[in-house]
Amino acid sequence: MKVNPAPLHRSQAIVFGIVLVFAIAITGTASHTLDVYNKQHTTNPWWAYLWPQHFDTTGTKAIIGSAVSVLLLSVVFLVFALVPRVRITP
Image (cartoon, rainbow, N blue to C red; front, side):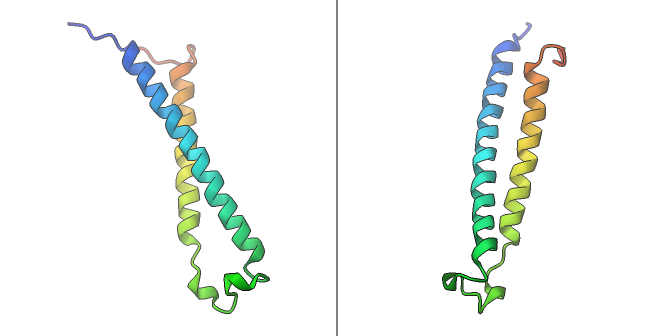
């Protein structure tokens, strides 16, 4: 019995499209937050510049790096999946 791969292929492309949208949203949100912190942490008293060791931004940088890598891999998958000349067919 031969399975038709077209519906599975279409659903994979849809899922990776959704992943791409979420990766863009995560990258934008985390980058904006880190940018605002970097611009204001020395002048804004609400950032408590007296205790810079209290605010650790390595987690935010890790989120940005992870989201960018997911974004790039999703774009690569979508290019391979949607461009007919590059598409790998079994």
